[in-house]
Structure formats: C-alpha cells, structure tokens
Image (cartoon, rainbow, N blue to C red):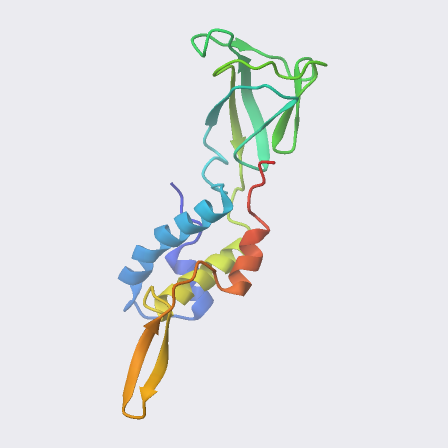
Length: 187
C-alpha cells in the first residue's frame, strides 16, 4: 500500500544532499509506514481514492468502520443469507453516517446477521497529515541513527566497554505523543 512519506521529503527535512544513504532510506520508508499504520490501526492514505469494503455482523445500534475520517459511503447493504446476496439500504431512511460509524435509524438497531452488512466507502486523507509526517521523519531518522537497534555503551571495567541492547516496546516519547493522537478507537 501507500507509504506515508517520500525519500525526497525526508532528505529535504534533514538537509541531506547526497545519494549515499538512498538505499537505506528506501528500505526503511515502507517499514516505518507499516509500523505507524499497525500502531495506529488504520492506513491514513490507502483508501482516500480507492474503495474499501468491510463486512460486519451488526447486533447493535451502530457499525464502526475501520478507516477514518470517512470521505463518503459508496454502498451499504443488508444480507439475511450469510452474505450470499445483499440488498441496498437507503441513507437517511435506514442509516446515517456519523464520523467513522454508521448509525441505524431503526429503533432496533442493526439486527445481528452473520456477514449481514457490507459497506463500501472511501476514507482517510488525501495526503499524510503534517504532524504525522513529522513523526514518520523522526522515526526514520531514529532507526537510521541507531542502526535499527537501541543500544547504550556501558563501562564494565576501565579497559572494557560493553554494548548493552535495551529491550523495550516504547517508541521515543516525542513520536509516541503524535501517534497516540491517531490511534483508532473501536470502542
């Protein structure tokens, strides 16, 4: 899928004018993009101009979509035969789109049917938001400086230095603050 940043923008951000590290940058950009998408549980730019189709079981008053912000809903349909055939539902009669969810206008909500609701929609951003781009640049720079590993020098004795690798699941705080604002909340 689409990367969140480009090599040209990253090099401009850091003021890099040579091509010496282009291969490393090209290798890391898709990995950094995927790390951010996985962490935030959304793709940001992949479905802005490409349809996304999801199937839900219903069973409550609203259906929460995986991608946001929702640009438009192309189709929303109901199946009572386990997804074999779908009947289109009508916006403002059967449902309404509110942010990243579809709300039932029936007092009974969306009845539960296995593979009962199919929605096809566009969602995300036309281009990566600037604060998210900055976090991606910083994360890429972080991995390039640390050779993809976090380590610290530790003196064992005056004549011996040992490299200690730190096992942590935490992202650098300034990057985590930005990413946490974009984490999808399916609650």
